Image 1: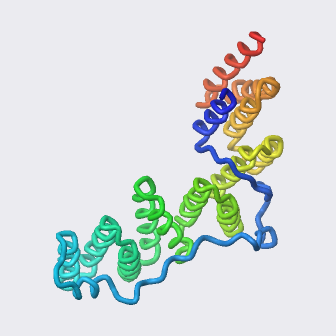
Image 2 (image 1 turned 45 degrees about the vertical axis):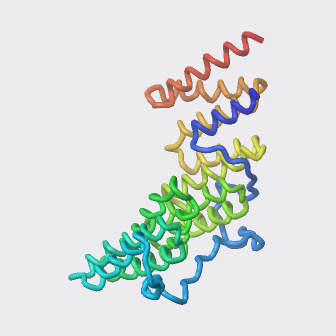
Length: 290
């Protein structure tokens, strides 16, 4: 029970508890030969229905109140004075179909929405709309959210939101205990974008996967290499390694204390300094008690 609490503490402080395994080293530059051919890429987006959602409604003899609302939106699109008006109504259509659990129709209309968005504002705006919709549904319905992130992966891999979408996609597969798919997503992104803020976050995720799979020493070694790649991340690296050693148990407390002392000495004004002091005090008390 005590060990579970410690592991949970590490997860809360550093943004997630994932119990998986990774063999590719996070500090390495990822190349195609390092990608496991047995691991599939992100799932394919579902095909569009043969009959459009609007045609389905028109074939019905009676409509429910929700369907009437949707039909009215279609009427507004047809009578709209501009493409910009139509864009607003199409986005409302997507949410209305999702609310009715008509996911196929929602996906169909969102792709129509993207075509119009690209026409008016360009691909950059369309990719941002995808990310916005994914984030909107992330805590409401993760299955819906992942569809929008996959769209970015498939249609807008050159966009500035690509990294954020890949990170969320990887987290989705981690939550579902599909480590192989999470890893291939992270590797794919790092192969395309080895540097940058999103790359840094993804490398951290990969190290977390390694640590929580039980590869403690390897993950600590990877954190050391990560620090060499990103020296400005020194305080984070040290407190992370300190918490890793703390999570391993009392025999590793001295190593943890050493990391926390390094933070206090070298980064006294950093936001981690106070946390480091508290952890030093806590572990020293526990060691003295024994």
